[in-house]
Image 1 (tube, helix red, strand yellow):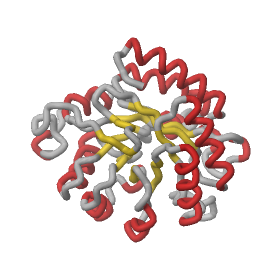
Image 2: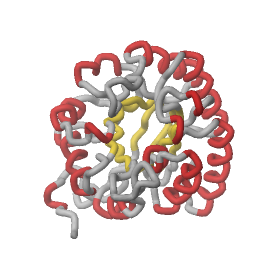
Image 3: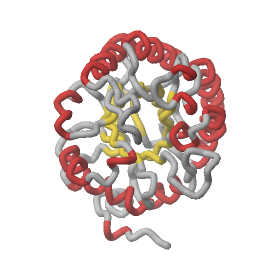
Image 4: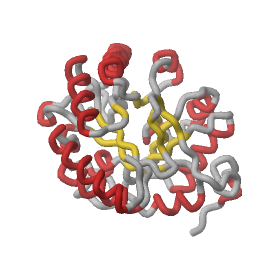
Length: 276
């Protein structure tokens, strides 16, 4: 089944042949031969926690910090995030480290809280929230758009088109695994989507090995495979105490494990002509 490229105009490589490079703040760029690593906890739990992790991942070579203040959870009784307070803690971590901040928006009514955020993430559950996408398309913020857990590559590109059709050309695509019949991993990481998207679109593509597998021990091999498949970067969950994490501890790696992964990726980058 071929992509229907006539359906997406702004996203298409036929419209723009050269790779789009997006500056997410502080001179950090995604796309165009750069390999960018975003790392941090699934959810912001305290100011001390998020700042400590930010300092650790920066020391290991992370280019940006991720952390959830608003958390979409399958259960209404699960930890939903610290919300506005969590945003304050993220910005404190940014001030302490200088790392650009990536965090998820759930409701356009919260947009005012994102004024100092560097990249607004649209999670898998909101990939086809078209009204949200159109509103974000009217902003000038880089948008990290995650593939829906049951969505096709075509649908991911069409969601990016919604953002770009409103004037915002700063879209970063993210493969985070799709739901299949396999039950060992949380999702099935579709690395084949990277070269497919690269051929059809000029937008940068990063990979989330944490949500894709749901298993901390698989983050390293899937990170290496993502670089080999042509990804422009990674978004990895790192926690200083995964066993007691309030969200997704099973897929979170320790700062020491992240450090080892970053070092190996640095060596691989030379082979694949990537800038890190």
